[in-house]
Image (cartoon, rainbow, N blue to C red; front, side, top):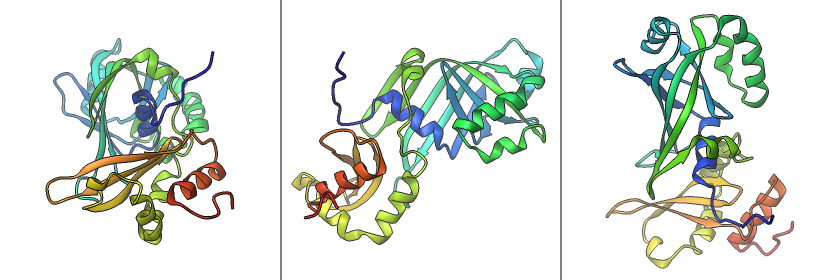
Length: 248
């Protein structure tokens, strides 16, 4: 079967990517205050989070170890300072369960192999692992909101550049204004009147935030085809910018 080409990540891919580089997230249980978490690891139809032992989520699990209805909220923020820093809001809904203490260390090592998170070192020192059996997800961006079922989320993969994207965008914004200007020429004429800032990059293309007096707009330039590594990404960006040496 031939997979159709697309010009942007699917909603499920965007959710998985945002969870890999999460900076701001909370888990909320029914009737309790939201508990801040700094790691959300998606595996199959589950989401693993590291929760403080002194928290509403931990108290709820202690009272009902068979699981409690819960929601994880992830805020995906721009890696540079823009007027509206939120790129997307994500909600994962399901049932939260405690991870048995004798399995935590082994599971943490497995998670760290794919999702290196410094906070995993806090496991057993005021923090414990919990597991959300995901029933579904919702992602909201400037383009609107969309629902994603658990099966689709489990099949999706994060963007291959998720770990480096924040540094790349910050570098492009601060050191390569000439490249941003060249890329801006590819945008529709009505989007060139404001201040254009790089907002995100993925294997499908590059996103921009256009800050205008009448309101901000998010837009993107797509590559002719998805790229698979840093060299292909560099060539695709050069081509979009009109570099005379796209294969250099």
